[in-house]
Image (cartoon, rainbow, N blue to C red; front, side, top):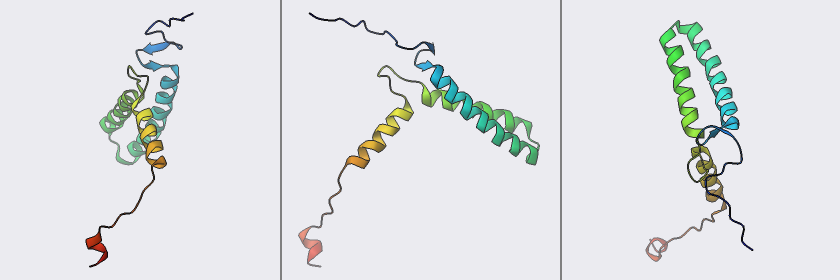
Length: 102
């Protein structure tokens, strides 16, 4: 007996392709923190365009980094996987014969 799983079926609802409720909450939290930091900078420098631009850039960058692709991986997931892989690799120091006899 074979069980056929249809392609493209999502287990969670998404706001747009690759960006669901969990990613929206993460984006809202990062944007809120960036907003507080930008507002502190605004109180010091009184530069309103910097305040608005910095919040929008952080929000757009967070959405871009957290959106999952067709393999269900985001940029953050790729970075986590690369860090985990590099930690599992062993390092062997090597010296050639010429270096030993110098």
